[in-house]
Image 1 (cartoon, chains in turn brown, orange):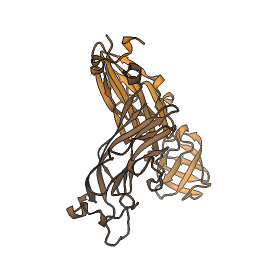
Image 2: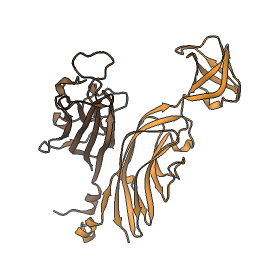
Image 3: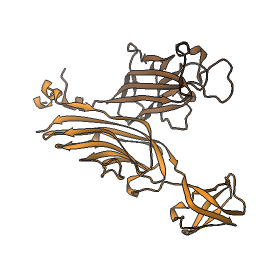
Image 4: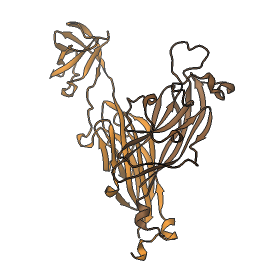
Amino acid sequence: MYVLKEYIESIIDLPASLPLTEVRAADWLIVATVKLIAGQQLTYRYGLVQVYAASINGVDLALNDQCNPVTIRRVNPSYGLAYLGIAKDYSSADDPSRVTWQGTAADVITAPSVGVYTRNQESSELIITEPGNYSFVVVNNCVASSTDSGSDLTNVDLQLVVTAQIRLQ
Amino acid sequence: MNASQFITPWSLSVCRSISPCLPQTDIGPQRSLVIGSLLLASGQCVNLSWSCLHLVEIRPIDQSSGLIQAGKSGSTVTATGDFFTPDLVGSLIIWSNGSRALITEYSSPISVEVSTAGVQYAAAATVSLSYFTIIPASPDLVNPVDGVVSFGVVAGDIDTLKIPAGKLLHPLSLNEPGVVALTLNQSRTYFGPTSLSLVVTNNARNFSAQVTAVAHLKTKVWA
């Protein structure tokens, strides 16, 4: 088999990258959006989320709290402190806790504590062919609360980095 | 099928992919943001094969009355100096005491007609002279042709402090929240020597815009 110019030129590799950014408790950011039209295919294989630091009112959490997320109250208990997923036709008014993320559980990168977390490379690629607007959304899953939440920590802000890549063809 | 259709190691080595990505970012009124730049030498060209612009949200920017005050009598608001313009129709006027009214008709630079029907914290029939703020209803565009936000290429030097930022080549534009993309059959090629910048522009005077943008360029030698 040979690689033709026409084939190479039909392949577009796109980044979904977020430089070090503070995302407030219970807030989220759209990292990148890709519009998929009929006949196109989106392939997602590699993604990484780094939780660089966790803080409350600008003060970093104690080390044992950073590494022990059980003490931090989360909006969605199914995920860690932060997570990255792909949503279809996402708008700023959508609450991430109610979004159905594309693919399977393997396609949502969850960060249980401070550290670096990647999508499992051994998982099969996520291939999307249905036309629509697909957005990479990174979510700070920590609860924002103005009332006393007991012993659990709330209002935890996270400094996040996202690096992901998709192929459009 | 002829040999020119095959990829050779040389042709692959001179072809570079560059993909600037702008995550969700707030761009202020009449501001431009350069998300990527490249320099093309003589004999080089770049193909913008794909780009996508997502306008996530637009937010009005409050306009303060400054030293001017206004009072309300019935449905007429009169200011102490020139302030009102016809494009303020539909905007909300908020006095310093928090009471509000909706501007329904422009009469003159110092007078407008207002309504309080359905307005939260509605102003009383009479409001004495006081300072106020205007919350605009719709974007006031610098260039109505360009939409609220635009994403395109600027060739040559760019002054990011001015709006419009040069003249965007083949821009994607949006007037309201949504997504627009350049498709494969709409790709554009630019030839060196020149500098190219990928720019996202907020064309509104009175709204900020939250946008994300991604693009894909491929450089290669053409001569």
